Length: 277
Ligand code: MLT
Image (cartoon, rainbow, N blue to C red; front, side):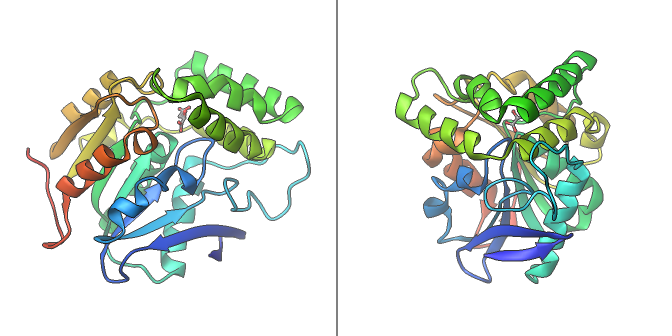
């Protein structure tokens, strides 16, 4: 399905019962809503799953007018605002569980900062609260320029091996390399620039009062366990779930364990969300 959101055509899917507990699933960089496909069949009987493609990714437009090789400005705030506008457009105004993986986690934190009353629970998967260091920022700018000049394969090739735990099949890796290559170079570059200048969220963590579940693959090398532990220590009502035999792509690598962690966190019958702290 598509709707117009802040001047772009945004693609999204909705699965599960209309009146079920809503879960907003925010994908990472440079992926799409397809990230969540392995867990959708495991969750859609209990929850209403709202699965957008962020601006520029999957089937969503980056901007109304983009020329090849054009640098298009966007931001983590813009992605968060797009999601709020999407929820308004589809009439889903109930507080919900916001689930974000990696860049999706940066967006989930920003969504919480801006739309706190919309968030009943937070799931921060394979993500971090710290902003980029000066060196990481410099690298993102350089990569964004290379992507604009040469194409999205630059990022797809650099990332694919870091995304997965070592035992992951080459077939699965190739499937995701292809998906990343298909993302337009303008979208990849604009997301890199958005991540480079994102706010540091460490101070925000202490102001998160909703139940929060932090998930991380035990073999995640992009946002390692230490990043998850930092968030767990700072967020009052948080649980930490470390997923065995998984890297950065926990819902793809271990869908059953990922879904089970969500189901323990959100009890669908009672519409209740809890952390053990
Ligand atoms: C992601 O998986 O969304 C990105 O790798 C996050 C990042 O580069 O900071």
